[in-house]
Length: 103
Image 1 (cartoon, rainbow, N blue to C red):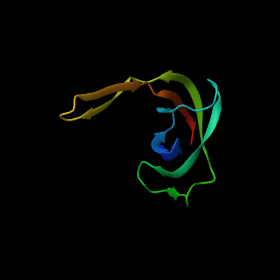
Image 2: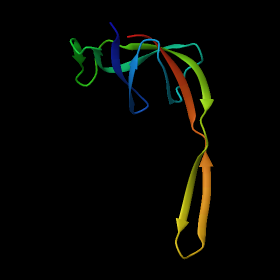
Image 3: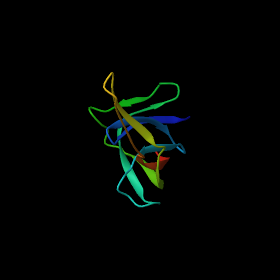
Image 4: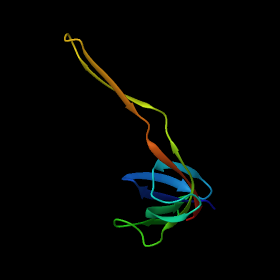
């Protein structure tokens, strides 16, 4: 039976299961470090056993840091009509890949 969990990191929530890889905002951990993520909810695929935290559960989801990398460039444009004002800037977000080891 597959167990799913809802975890929170970087102000965002992710639906994960064991063996899954997720891309999150950069974390201050070295590669191959094991970290614990805040668990908000766990449930099985049939929905028979549901553990809901208020606001989070005491058990943690264990994950391993696979890599750190830069994401695709995001363009930020500023434009004002009828005044010939245009500005384009961009940035590449710093991201981290996590592999879920244990729920």
